[in-house]
Length: 279
Image (cartoon, rainbow, N blue to C red; front, top):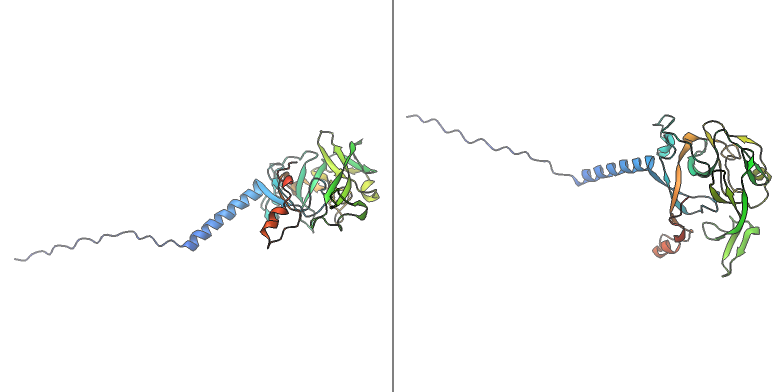
């Protein structure tokens, strides 16, 4: 008697996951991190370092600060490198007189610059004998104690004129500048330096700020290429869409004495008292 062969049991199929590649996982993480940093820098916060003395006495060479990006809206200059992905300016708001802003300088030598907002669209501005005249009224300028800055690698004797060089009670070489307090009509008060009588900077023509632009000045009035001078000597009027953000707080500062091969100097060169200063 023929017997029907018993069919063999079906093979159990199992889904076999491909082995995970550590390289692929690392690349995915780095891409996500880069996207997160790009979003953070473009739309929320960005770091900025001070390369020159044009904003003395508030900002020193070697200061590092955070800039908030949402205050005045967004444009292509909100993005790293000015990538032209945002047309014009969206969610735009005008700055307030006295704000310290980071902006993109005029072409062709465009780079990030920091100055203080003095004039808004429609304002008239003139400088007479070193005093700013805003809409026909002089901005109060009060003499206060000299600004004293120790000479360090970040600010050496070459950056301080010989007439301003001095030594303190401990014999440390310092730079001593005449300092003044300016107070804008909105009550905003800040310190400026006025080193000497320089006709090109201290006695100007009358400026009328065009619509959509701002008039910016450095607090170190005799050492700042700003809106008082047309490009390429200065900056001229700056379009609102070139403003990248508002300076809010200093998060680090160094006097330039640090050495990469000496980790202890990273701490001794830090100007700890400047960390946390707002605007």
